[in-house]
Length: 202
Image (cartoon, rainbow, N blue to C red):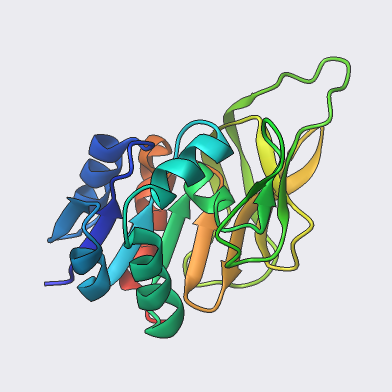
């Protein structure tokens, strides 16, 4: 069985994401904040709901967790999936309620959408996902988004979408992939995305 560590740091739709992973074919999902479990996981999923700083603070407050994630993903090459704010935390920094340091795994800054007449913020609802290159996890389709900030200034864009302007819908680098949308809320497209992640051998 493939051991998947679904990171529990108080800032994610853990039950929904776990159920979606199981529906996509995962047979061993551990909802965990234990660095020892993360250190031996075959795959790691980082969900995220809320403000960038609160999520990063929650993650950093668990002794040894960020270090275990970093070692397992960036040193040992375990496939990693970040979801919504879990994707945004991959950035160098986020600008929600001040500037705050992120994990720095993928270069870029998380910025607010620029207000414009008729533009609803946060961006909420179904929108197209348009891949920028062929990637084993990211495919064209329609997904469910809910966010007021977006991943900007990055060279690792794997897909885009549009809300007033084009924004990053997914990032990818080596064995790391992140999606701004919620696969667990994106019905057939979301389950197919998770199936591809589970089958991915970077």
